[in-house]
Length: 110
Image 1: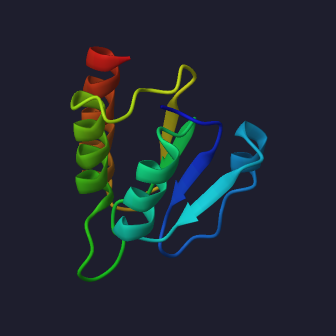
Image 2: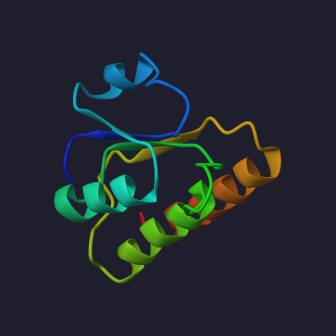
């Protein structure tokens, strides 16, 4: 299942205006609970903006990318046909981890 909406995952930044150019329906998730609940309820989004460091005592953007990937692999959800992502993290190592994971996931399952 998938739906035309965008997830903006970031605990500090406000939603980038360009997110609304992808789709008018943008969900701002500030942490792991919001992110996972949104995907479980609505299926795969059209686009995800990833931040890595989401605050104290919550999963990182990389861990959430892995959980998203597990949902794809376990066929709980399927990729949106136009799926894309962007990483806006100031953490270069975390951003690279997300990027490599998502590239491999897309190559294998999309």
